[in-house]
Image (cartoon, rainbow, N blue to C red):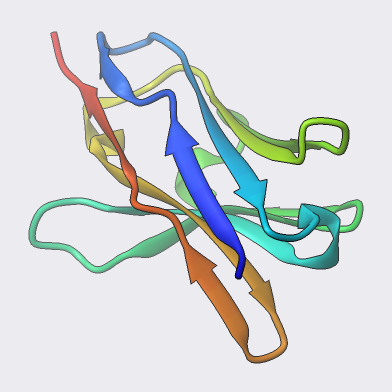
Length: 114
């Protein structure tokens, strides 16, 4: 059973940075398409960034500000978030996807506010 544990969320001022971590256990993240999603209050969950092999994909709203990466030795996927805006406020979730398998973490809260 694959388990995902996110961390790194918190309160940050507009223009600030955070780095989210998603530690993967039970398998190797390289075997999956890994993604970061977010859900703001009253809104649907949306994909923020994804990585599969060496390919990355970003939502238009975060391009140029967020970077997804993976560390094979730590079996961890990161989301570096720079130039944060109040509209980035949400619960951020890590996802591992392969064929019919899909796993989610518990989420980590990111709040961007002055």
